[in-house]
Image (cartoon, rainbow, N blue to C red):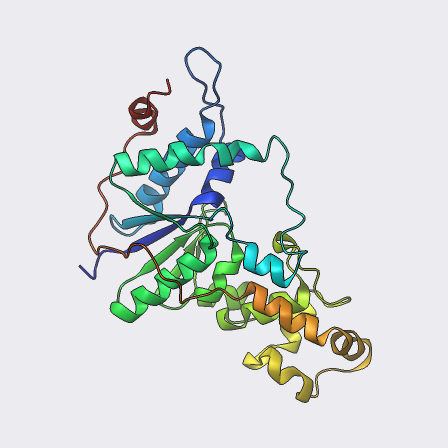
Length: 284
């Protein structure tokens, strides 16, 4: 059913938003358990499908594996090293088993590979979907802008944290907002830096200058011979050249993972009410 859109959900990203950005706390009846992450996860997903999707999609939720960052951390020990792991940060992580149990109970597909980040799983799913069904529309629900590198006329990012009218991001929106194309995104972030992944970027190179250096579709490998590097910019980039290439490799997503499941091609049943999810799990 090629007319059924595929919605790939960044599970950790949505859980984080549910845990810390949901408008009201949801507690168990005895007030001893905070159910906000689980309740909010399904509430936010249900609203997004109802309000943002063109038709009922096939939903596939993807979670980061426990050791998903190992390869990138081996390449660069500073990768995501800025992420705090205090008690508050554990709140959404502790909700993952309940969310996965509920997804299974309501026949909603999900994937978690111990040794892979959700980014790479989603990138592989996008690549597979484009190869198998050239006309199928794919949506990526996440606030992570690294997914911009995957965008095409067939692939759209959905970020419901943004204002209405700006929530659907395709290639044209990336060019309009940042001055680069989706395929240039890893090059762009390697130059300017990416605080989310703890990539500092080149000193003195912000997003405006990075976009200017990459104007007209230029790629990082072409930059040294482009004639665009002059003065301090040339010195700073040249001094860090091998590091910049390494940062780009960290940002690039893998598209060749061996996946435990593939999209089925038919729409997922209408999502349950969040209260029904909590009831099904016996958490009230």
